[in-house]
Image (tube, rainbow, N blue to C red; front, side):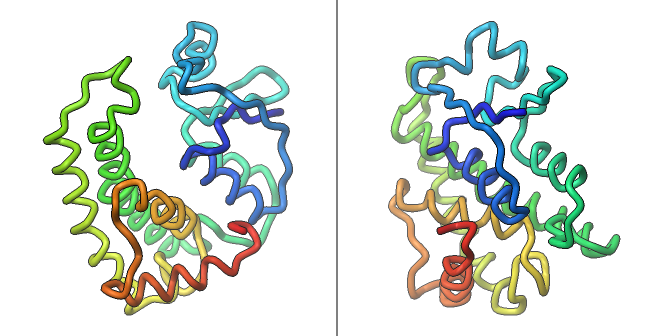
Length: 202
């Protein structure tokens, strides 16, 4: 099997960190998204969403969407990490907070970047006002995360999960939008320092 990816992108980073947490090595093939290689007919046959990363299995099956790829590796490799939770309640909390971080954090971050920078203006309409609104929504979301981390060691509770991986990747993207994990977010800063010690993100 192999991963079709662009290793510099947030989605690829999320899968890479997840695999490191599980101790799994996978062959990788780089896709030049700037040159729109992910928009070719051949690529779209593998990934109908036209996005990376894509996991290509030995039997020719393809799995796109980074969280789906992570779920595949988690389910197909016996481990005790519980990155999607152990009990039904833990699994529900992981799903809940993962959705919150993605929809209120990651999606606005990507929308802000794409619409403010015009990075993909050759293939999509960029609306500066929407970029500014998305950046503001992201800025307003960070205190929500900070408040939550004032009550919990990790995003989904008392142990590290995929939600923390996604939040780490989001935090790494903030600088592109002139946002930062600073002193105004002390609990997020504490979490960020704790995250930075994990071998999987170094």
